Image 1 (spheres, rainbow, N blue to C red):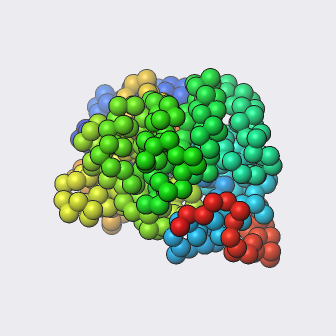
Image 2: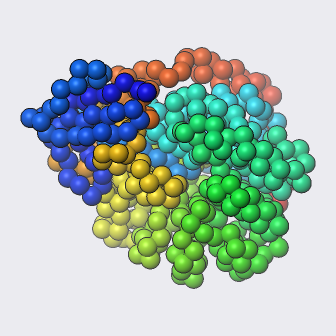
Image 3: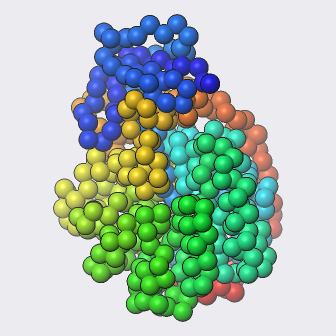
Length: 447
């Protein structure tokens, strides 16, 4: 059992719909929030580890709804390209040449460091050799949904495409009950890289294990023309015809939806995760989050991988989410700051199936972050909007995950950061010494 933590003299941000609470304390017992209140009600806790929160803000840890953690190795490898060229001519060839179990472990651990240092405590990941990602995130002290990648082409760790479902089941079975912080899932890459049969088998497997099912969908304008054996006139109608949409399905991106697509998603109960910076950088477009929210579709927030963002800082992502919606609609009220905060906390928790996460309340998981408010760009502090429009990941001083302190005074305690960076630099030097040539992939191209 973790030692109790008692945080004192702190400003509390309990959830996006509640005003800030000044001069408070918070107590954890084990991996849960036990209680909190104003300082004049401070309890006597002789066995608790004391953390002085003077000048700091305490809030729920952020949830990254979509990442490819191991792709930190490819950060900056191929910038300023549209999606099709970026994916087919650079990323797929680089993955074929350089993705290995060792690469996935160390590069996922580097992503964990970046996320922890910027206040992310939970991540949903999708990639290959996902058992290595799961182990890296577990070793780093994070909470995670690592999802094994499925694609109808030879992939890292799955040389024969016909083995992709069996490989995914091996992963699910191995990690199903291994640790309370890890919940394994399935990541079917997209409806243009997976056949209808593969998608249905993948979803059947996810249902068997009651596992989250992630899929890229409606990311680019051209995607409808690239569908494998299309069963509908849009990516969403294609997925619906295959009976893939339900409350355990998380649709990633959803930039190009029409009114019928949005109605289908709403009626299915599926969730959506948008990645605004990745979509902007690849010129894919801006998802109409406001239109989805009007229908009651839960929309969460992710960074996507480092190769297309190139940052894993969710504070930066919330800012771009809110401003992008305003610019797209020319309506300054289209995405209030509190909704951007909800996308990275309470809504993501709902979509990912974590009912006791991302809110400060008794009985909720003790996944918490402290921000140093004693910064010129964080003064004065009137309300939580500051967290979206002024704060950044560098303001995070301390991180608690599952009741354990993993970051203290911006020093990671859960693993050796210098060792991790040294290993990634070695892997990067090998990639740079023998860079993959940009050449057409054997995969179907996006035009």
